[in-house]
Image (tube, rainbow, N blue to C red; front, side, top):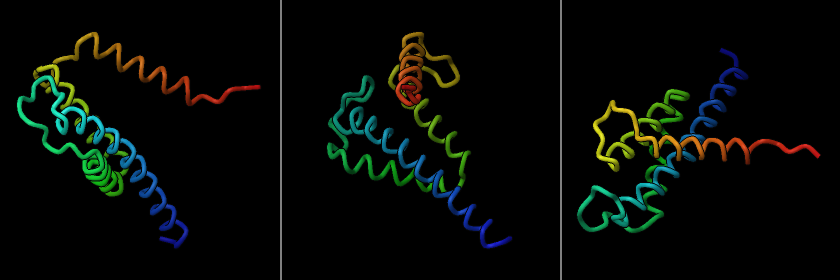
Length: 122
């Protein structure tokens, strides 16, 4: 393996780590809101940790490490985590399809992400 190929592999892994960091931070914000502040629909009890920084740093670091090690396969961990949160919040059995409302919200978020990330022509 040449030095250039090794550097390219390292940059690829760092890129996946940054993507994992971003999505891990988003999951951290969701975890903070649902479980840190106890706004969950199914969690009865006091908030676990009301400090946003703890949730974002820990979840971001976990998913960044997963992205560095597993590269593109780390997206499966992100999707499984989000799916687990949604199934827990809507009290669904894993494997069942999500409700139409959740599907509409996810579709709206995807459309908004594509809409705002598309370049505009002048």
